[in-house]
Image (cartoon, rainbow, N blue to C red; front, side):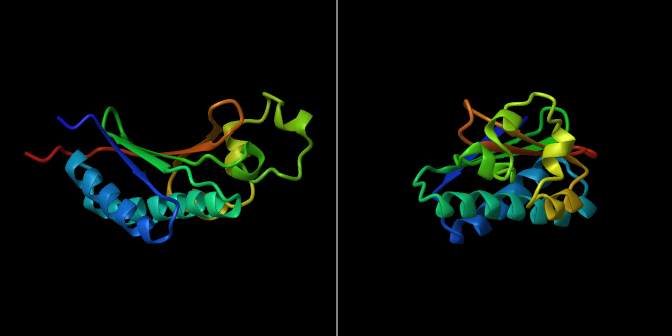
Length: 148
């Protein structure tokens, strides 16, 4: 039984390919259906590219975090450390509106920069992490039959 795999990488575009390869290998091992693996690859690539771009835009040397879990559906979390308003694509909103708890996950995932990602994965959640520093992009896919 797999449980959780964690991958941290420096915010360089060259590492996105490695993250995609690892994510698809873990998805295959977890039992995600073959016909969903391209979707997994594209979604992980897009989420990691987004995180790397944000780190580079803000000059952040912090590692990009990726966590994959097969507890329930196959779930991938990609975490950046950019300012929350940049990470959510909501930089135009005033701080008091950003703090508004009525902003739903659906509203956040339809923000700038998430249209393409939302096209790759049905179960997508974007939320702030760690007191306004960073965002988590959470994606999940159903598990098929587990490999023997």
